[in-house]
Length: 116
Image 1: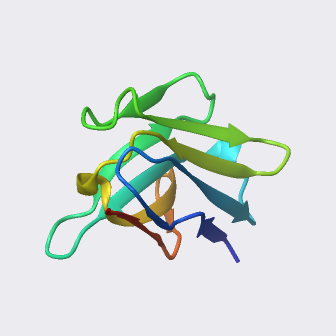
Image 2 (image 1 turned 45 degrees about the horizontal axis):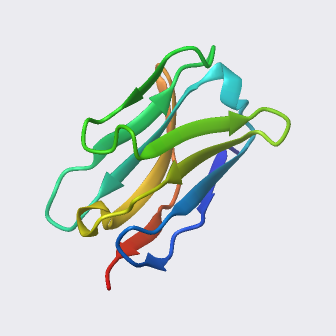
């Protein structure tokens, strides 16, 4: 059974950093487009960053470009989201996603709260 398990969410002060991890089982991260999404109450889930199977195509939403970095460790079959200079508007539940049409898998989410 495919599982994506996120970890690393926490309460952090503005300007701080966090690294989220997404450990995958029963799928290989290099065969899927792996993405990080986030969602706040009452809003639609939005794409934050993704990386294609080759690892050559990486994309970020404009509001996090230059602050967030998506990466993967093929040996650990894990995808990361390094988040720097966090701001209150980054507060959300962050979800890991794996897509290879028609397959579409989600993790359970990890809470990131940016507050002083």
